[in-house]
Length: 123
View 1 (cartoon, helix red, strand yellow):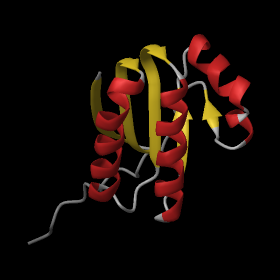
View 2 (tube, one colour):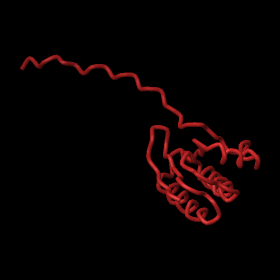
View 3 (cartoon, rainbow, N blue to C red):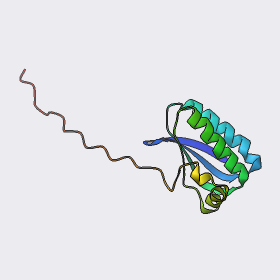
View 4 (tube, rainbow, N blue to C red):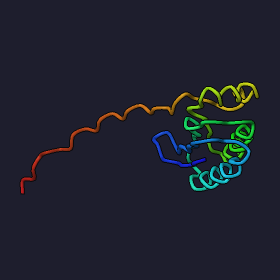
């Protein structure tokens, strides 16, 4: 299991790559907790698009992360869940408790700033 994070316009994206089973769960929980503390005021997005396997331990990891992150006053969303993992979440009823998105939200493009004044000084 590889855990990583990056800053995006929408918030902090934590990504899991590989298998998320019983043996990897503790590593994932530890990484989530450290990242949540490091970015205590940012919205957190958990990107699962790199998962190749997930069992019920993954449900526990995601549910625990949601509790901790919401308890700290941050927002939490799961993005990019592969079909096999989504079936696990659907079977468990987690899709009613946790927000899932197919991809990261895109913020509206900022309007272009006005051109700076090009007038020259008369000195």
